Image 1: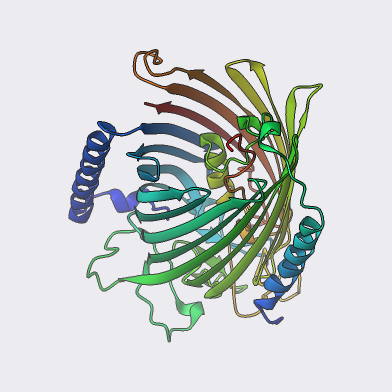
Image 2: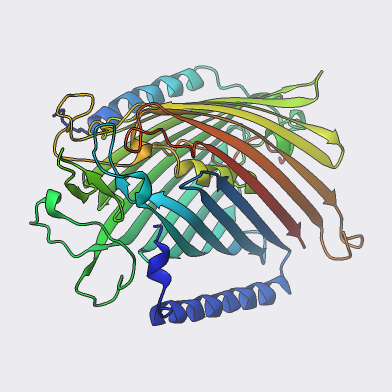
Length: 429
Length: 80
């Protein structure tokens, strides 16, 4: 979750200092395992990458830096052990109060600065036997106002002379989010939003930790049809239960300007079906890919995604990918830009209220690309004397969102153009 | 207010899955290992783990109301 800057003022929480020590200890342990294993490993691979997401705005811009590192070690033919660290360093400003066209309150000046860092540490393994593999992993994530524990297992196999591959996966998350200390029996319209994260996950009587449980299921089926054509179908389902709103966001719910904490249903079932194909055109020496995804959930959002990309080698060691994507979704059943009007278009919609633009009707366009350079070595002739292979990638994407119904007090948001840069290096040794 | 039912999600997706499974089983083409040179190339892989793709999915998950249905690893393989 994002946290207002004010919560960081004062002393650095003791819990955070202890958490940082734990992270450093865990990373040291990871490096020790990696170092010990790589001494006798057949292959070890280190991936280091970072992404920068920028969403400019006059009032509520957002910047996210997302560094990550993954070390995978294969001590023998059938086992791979991996550890990963990832962070989300978020800063910017956002409106803590949502009202629509009829709300007679100052929404724009409610924008507050925030800054937070999410740390996530993952450990996992993959066992491979003949044409079957089994993987397991555990991820712990921590922010000032959010904690997550996630377990994931997956199994895959291929058959029919490796023309068919099936992969099944399941993930279970046990998360906690910090909110104000309202009782379950309190009327939703009387609940207050957080103004900062101070006191979260302590014995502070003004704070409460609310559980969120997450179940994710996925089936993937990859099929090769001809020497130049393959398809993949992925069916996903997710169940979410618990506090699913934003604990910092209030919504104007009455003409007099009354505000209450965003109130979302406590259950959500989500399903998606993705189908994509890859076809290699020999004349153009280019691999083309087209995909479509349909999404539906019990909040009545129906989403459609259409993607195209093309990738080819510009040089034997350099390949370039270009991509385009279109996305559109309907609104959630209880979404309204303004809950004060009383009419279907601008009035209350049942017992829930939301200020989340992700639940409003929207569409988006994305264009982007990636360049990836790879240099192959071999035992006795390693790249820079160290790597069996070394690759580096640079990516850039532009995302333009069209919010069909979402306003901030009747004014269209100006933070609808986002840029994403990514940089990655991978070395095998 | 309209009832929020899980079956609204499961039923249409199940129909899609069933239809596509039938389509696939009706024409299980076989590509022999020696024909897999192109399929084994990285440009023909359904790669869910590239750095730029992971960053992009992470950003989109936080900007859209939908999620799931993305790529899993897989694709052509030159191995025997």
